[in-house]
Length: 411
Image (cartoon, rainbow, N blue to C red; front, side):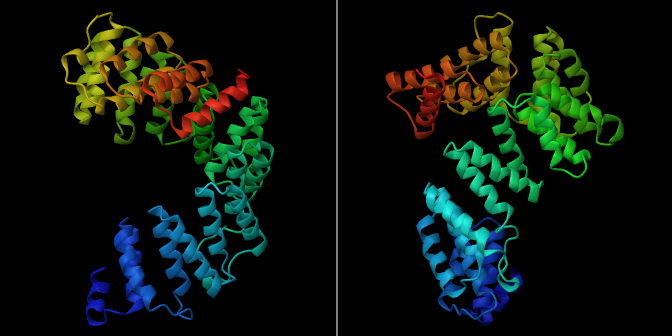
């Protein structure tokens, strides 16, 4: 940037250098500042310049990140006028339509990308836009409108072209589980996308099944490579987490106590607190709380101390002696999710009492979404109704969930 700045002092209207500075600011995440330089470069725009197409694409990218979607469409129109063979513009259009929820237009543009093929080499900026990326977008759109069979076909095509697109793997597994596909068949299909099941693939498949709360299968994947890997910290961490969700708290502690890597340490310690608490190892709980205090997460410590007090049967909690604020709400919901996902229902109900100390009209909405995420449809629906009746509050996501519940339960 220092070199570019020096050149711009000597030649402030140099479009190529202005473009380069815009690219640098974009790389730093300062998209507004990037657009200042890109817009200035665009004033001297020459279609025959070698960077002309890239300039417009970068402007589109910055505006998209800043959610200036209509501005994106205007620039796409300009780009397609001067560079009609550049598939990137049609792909940008598909994504913008998708973000604007104009799904039919997005589908049309994505299919056009596939028929256009890759851009000429000199105009090519993004790889895969005429193949797996467009198929993936079609799959996500189909999923969002409830066309699960079409979504499956598009995502299946995506993964056959590029098995490394992990989002597609997660989404197709979600469809397979939604269709109540046999678990062995799901494993076989997901594994079939890969030429070899190496260590990275094993971790990925483990994560796929853990997201679907199939922790026994996730554990087996990790356990199968324990002897052949040097990544012992990662193995111990995931084994410990999966064992917690399988309610094997003693074995979970044996694995998590081996974790010292900073990448996994915080989560390990909080999970160890719960495992120790549920097995009544109260001295260990106190020691672990002392360790957690070094993480500089005061809200988490307050919530865990209060929860520990509730589990021990104390009528009072740390929260009752603390000036409460909305900053604690996220920490409470972090704990609630870990408990609900681990089927710790008694403990979950006790933790719900922590919400009584927080004044926030979004609590019922958040609870409704949490219940829905883990399949508790009746509880979810009741929380949304409560939010409407008590707080007169609802949002688009919650309404969509209520609609889905009504269709599933046929109230």
